[in-house]
Image (cartoon, rainbow, N blue to C red):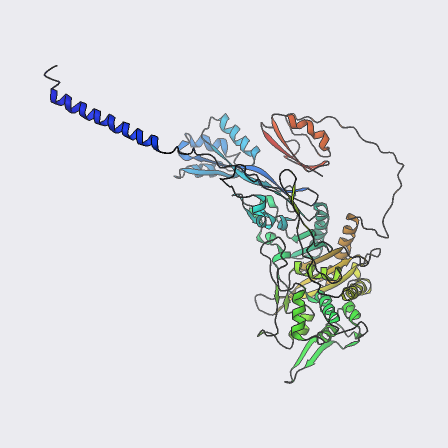
Length: 621
């Protein structure tokens, strides 16, 4: 042994060993002097706020979806995997096998699954002893009313960001950004829209029926409180089911009231007469001769000629609106200077955005007299609603000036915003603009609109027991392929203000590209009457034909059995909030109660098998 362990080798070995020990100790000493690194923590969770109607009825509710994936290297038996999971993944055996047989390491089996779907997939995987499937939680939305007010509500994408409507424009309110320096994260706030979901539903049914009757390509209905500027109903058809937004046709995603710019036609005549009357260019007793066409001979010898629908003879401004006379409106426009006419049109809000809480709003187009395209035809043509483009929102906002005796009010679709505890952090207050019309001008136009509703082109809107002010208009639409105007495509629209004695509501309806009959007085005016009647009854306005019924004074209150949750979900419809409270103590399910009153809908549907930790959404009204 003494010969094997030589002294030189031992000295060398222990020298190296000692050096390593010293180096390790120095390293540990240096590391001990470094600051302690923060532990990696998961980012804090922020719950997105809900979107509800003005009474709190849920329109968009936060939920959790799951993105399901797996690393293909972890699949031991691809045939068994495909056989077991294809049915619950809504795929064929061949589709799933081909998907997992590719060389990609990690694949998404299902991009978006509900909690119930994820539980079912997890259960089947456990039964077949399939491991390593990843269930990634992703924020999601449930839209319990499907396509109701879909363009207004908008849509939230898979990454938790709003892509359209209020979901987009109020993204920072609904889901504030994470602040890593804050002790407590700010949670998403709830946005209360100005619309009434019940009224919205009733008017959408009228709109669907009207589209079917007229075979129109699209339709808009706006109903606004003219005192506050709040939109009570916001309809744009066709509409997309927000729960299937990704696969919905592009036409159903267009927010027409905000982004579509078009020539309004004869509806615009109420503003032309208002501006001429307000500038003292005309008086109620002035008389103009309609001989079938407006004609004006220029110094160059050129003649400007605009056809009228009839030979109306001598007409006052009131009668010109009653008959929708192009000839007289052209003559009325001659009473105003070009620049003054255009400046006053802009004061009404045309040519600029209304500033409503929605993105992508159009400014429309108002031509200036110094524009190259301005001609001798421009002013009389604009006077009858051509050579100018407007949005439906602009038309409604301009009408608030007439309804409010000369003072327009800014439109809004947000009633209030609350935090998670229900504390109001924002509440809409009417934003009145500068006066643009004299009170007597507004009163005169309202009386002219009432005449149009009783004996003029809008007589089919007349409902008798409540005085309506109405103006109809039918405009040829632009031919985007060949230029000029189309011979087959028309935009039919009608605006109404009521009750005339004390205006409260502005109602505006637009029907695009109807088949067959296109005259607004025939196809839109009746819809105005039907819609106005529903609004009047819904809002409890007094009317001459209000029905009354006799009652014996006895009320029978039915007794209901106590609710229990067994193997299948019961039908909660009609149950009160008080009856639901005992269910909140159940451990195997999570119950979310939205709103107050009685249950009107539920998710999942009655009869759905109850699973562990199932989330049940109940919507009360």
